Length: 116
Image (cartoon, rainbow, N blue to C red):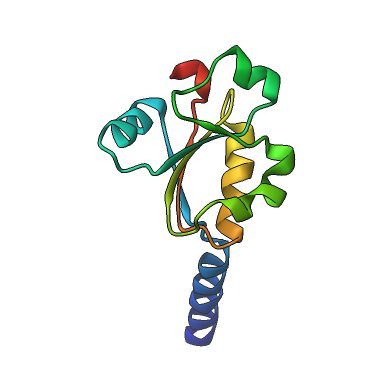
């Protein structure tokens, strides 16, 4: 029984270490606080160009989700970014992609632009 417990604990630790992401999900209220406090170096809008032109957060850089992998070389991996979309789905995907590629300071706005 003791061996089983130890193996189970090791398995849990291994899975936890592999599944960790280096981004944090925040709601729109917390995102505004982060932006207002100067803790965000850049705001990434991962919506379509049409959505961006219809309205966006002031100062946001448009990098649609479909091209984020080809455009992320233009971003500093040491910078802190807020990522948003319309409802939070695409921003979560973009945050995953960025964190898997070495970006360590990512905030995913779960509520999306509709709640800004």
